[in-house]
Length: 124
Image 1 (cartoon, helix red, strand yellow):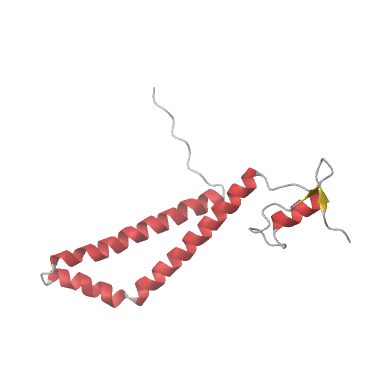
Image 2 (cartoon, rainbow, N blue to C red):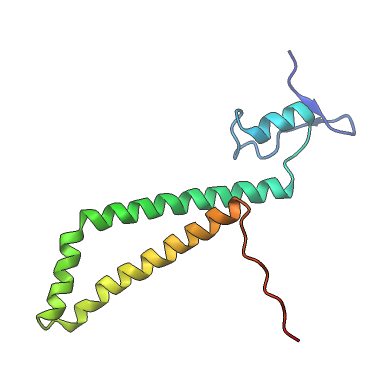
């Protein structure tokens, strides 16, 4: 059984991005069956999906670390009351990191689902 595909000019064509997509990939199977490459929109969707999954895993890891080291974080907050004023920055930095990563994940998640904010009307 010959699984090679031929392009419009009759030359053998390769599957798109052979090192990125596995042979079980949707894009690879589609390319073999219909001799088409993934569109730019499909590539962008895949890239957004990968970024969203990576951010989601990052948020889970951050929450795990927060609960794992909660005693130390509380200790830093207590040191601030005892006079070590510079230690106040540690909980604030943790909150900023959480805010940034969780916000980026949430934005990508809702955009992937197709829910986008209403465009603001321009005032003249």
